[in-house]
Each structure stands twice: as C-alpha cells, then as structure tokens.
Image 1 (tube, chains in turn red, blue):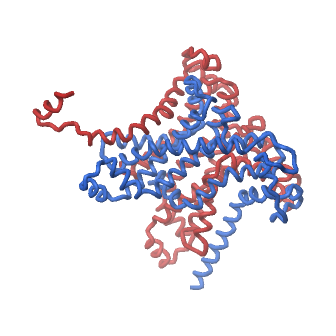
Image 2 (cartoon, helix red, strand yellow):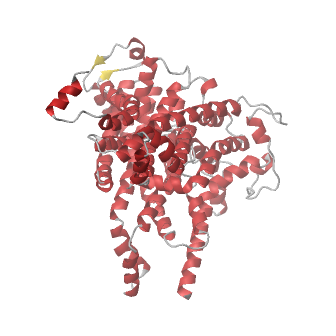
Length: 308
Length: 284
C-alpha cells in the first residue's frame, strides 16, 4: 500500500483519489441492501422454479433440480389458465376505466375554477390509503343485506334482488375491478394532469381562434401532444394493475371458488397454502416475464426522458 | 365573457359531483364508525347520522363499553405498526440520503445502471418478493421471532422510490451553494449534513412520511412473515377483524378509520410534495 502513491507519481498518473471513490461509497449501503432483499431473492426465485421445492425442502435444504417440470405442472393446471384469463380481464378493464376517468378529471382540472385545488386534493386523497382499509370499506359498501350499493340499486329499481357482490361467482370479479378502478384514479389523474399542465398554451389559443370545438381540441391537439405521457401512464398502469394482490386477497381470497383468482393470488396460494414453492416460483417467473414486456417499454421511455 | 362563466360553472359542478362520488367510500367509513347500531342496519340508510356513539372505538381498544368484549386489541397492533413503520423510515432515510446525493452530484461509471436498477426495483411487486423472501428468511431464522423480517422487506419496498424522489430534491439545490461551502473549508459530509440537508427539508419530510406509510399499510409481508399475534401490525389487525366479526360494521369501520387517518392527514399536508415526487418518479 505504502509504495503505491510513489509508483503512480513516478508514472505521472493521478492517484485514485478518495473523491473518485466517494459516489460508490455513498451508493454502497442502498445498493447492497437492495441486492440482498430484492435482487438476490429474484435470482433465487428463478433457481427455485427449476427445483423440487416444498415444505420438506425448506427444512432439509436439500434441493433437487427437476428441469422444466414446475413449468409443465403449472401450464397443465387448469387453474393457471383461469388465473391468466382473470388477470388479463382485471388488468385491461381496470386500466380502461381508470384511464378514461383520470383523463376526464385531468382535463376538468386543467383550467382553474372555484375550489378546483381543494377538489383535486380530495380526489387524490385515496392514493395512500392502505389497501386493507380500501378492501374493508368496499366489503361494507358491497354488503349483501345492508350495503349502500345494493340499497341504491334496489331503490332505483335497477336490480330486483340485492346482489351478493363478493359471494357470487358471476359478480366477484366485477366487484374487485370496481374497487381497483377507485384505487387507480388518483394515479392516472396526477400523471395526466402533470402532462396537460406541461402543454404549450398558444396552440390551444390558435385553435380557439380558428374556431375549433372543445372536442376537436381534445382529439386533435391534447391527445396527440400527450402521446408520451399517455404511453407512460398506460404502461405503468399495466405493471401496477397486473401485480394487484392485496385488495383481492382481502376481499375474496381469489374466490368464491376461483372467480377472482389472478396470477398473483395463484402464485401466493401455491406457496403459502399448498407449500409448493417450486411451482409458485415458476408462476412468479411467468408474471415477471409478462411485467417485463410493460417494463421494457416504460424504461425505454423513462431513460429517454431522464436523459441518462 | 358569458361563455367563460358558463364554462366555469359547468366545470365547478362536474368537479363537485365527481369529488362527492369519489369520497363516498371514505365518508361512509367515518359515518358508519360513529353511527348507533340501529342506524347502521336501518333502511333506507341514514346519510347523516342523527346521533353519535364512540363505543365502536372504545370496543376495539378494549375499553369498557355496554357491549361484549372483542378478542382483538388495537393497542397492540398500533404499537407494532408504530415500531415497524418508524424503524423502516429511519433505515430507508439512512440509506437513501447518501445514495440520492451521489446520484445528483457525481458523474461516475455505473450511475445510469444504478438508476435503471432503481426504476426496475420500484416496479417489483411485493407479492413476488414475498415468496423467495419467506424461504430465505426462514433459512436465516428471522421469520416470526421479531419485527426484523418485515422491516427489511418494507425498507426494500420504500427505498427505490425514496432515492428517486430525494435525488430530484437534491438536483434543485444549485451546486454553487455547495462549492462556496467547500471553499470555506467544509468537507463533503459536513456540507451535506449542515448545508444541503436543511435545504431539502421538504423533500426529506415527504420521503420520511412516504416510507413510514409504506410500512404502515403494508399487508402481504406481514401476513406471511408474522404469524405471532404479538408482532402483527395494524393492517393484519383489520384483516383479522373482518374475518372474526363479519357484521360488527361500526367497529370494523372504526378500526379502518384509525388505520386510514395517518395516510389521509399526510396526504392533506404533503399533497404537493407527494404529487411532484410521483410525477418525477414515474414520468420524468
């Protein structure tokens, strides 16, 4: 160590200064931590998906490589196909309505009006509310006998009999989708509002002078100019919706039967109820692969914007 | 002019209706929690409770009421949640501050890769983390014996987003301020702690509250790692409650209100920071 400075000085190059190492020392704790608690476990999942891994393995730590057997087992399971279908329905239906409502609200709030700031604040207040609270409130709202929603529907004569929203197989999926739409509105509104606020004012003024209607301005100016924001919102929405687990587990646990089983609840059930960690890992890898499609698109965009 | 006022009125009305509809679940939660039981089961439901009771709250805290006792005590869950969320917050800040500072102030090899890694980490679903973490934590022997497992996992959940937001805060501080302090003889760490951190106070408060709330509301880690009731946080408390007392709606909503309050208060006070952080973290 002691001879190093001399040597480098002789060669006339710079000593690797502390200043140069500083950024690495600064990111080291976070980097190591995230690798240990996120990176390594994800690599571990991939290994697990090729192993026979169950409750006995957990104790003995004797793993056995079984190739693609977990994937074959999962693919051959009719439950998997059901969960995949539900995931797609859940994701696209949620995003469709979240996005439309979010865009509508963002356009509404793009011009100030009395109390507009207060209203926008209140409309976003659901964003940080814990999922267990959301799930519980909606269980009460959707309650068969005393829920507010059944009361409104029956008094308006929209339905004859109260609906067992989460207890009937044909309405359970719709119910969790409605809850998820409510959850996603703040996110969509915030991002789209930020996008609209950033649009150049003069284009709209020019269009008004040329006699464009509000609808024409929306279709021919706002939406094309918002293209990149919209793409980001949709791709992030895809990632954030496909992974939804909490509200579904809290409200229905994937049931009744498998009516609300989606890929995340299916993966969780395989691990924590069937203790088949190997197959659960295989489902996880499949979910990751689907998420990757959304993530790559989003990251391409984010990296461009971030100017990395 | 007339066109303008009509448009403003229309916007106001649509905004008002949308806000009211959106707030129904929260309104219904709070009013149900204080309604006397007969008003809860009344048809048509009472939109505005005509009288109030607090037994629902007293009951979940195990205080004396005219009703029977519950087998659930919110005090215990509240204590556990406060510990888990506070430690998560401290741990997150401790690692996020230097990392965010390095990302905002240094050009170094691997910087872009690290930001990319953070963006990916931020999108990683907790339900996918919980499966391998359960196996690993079990092998490390930290499942179900202390808060450690949940705190580690919650911190990993909060950390990437926290670094991304804090980095944006640091970027807003002009480098000249720092340079002036260095010339005056301050070391990097001194300048960071005594000059820069006070300047990014609002960003720090926002990420502190954010990481606290992540752990406060976290569900799936606690559900899977902590079977021991003595250790479970309040999110699991509510989940147990709805499993045990299916028609005890006022106490159920009282419990939910208690869990929701920190999130609602934080949002009302820190709305601007949250929103700018969210847009910075995901679009910009």
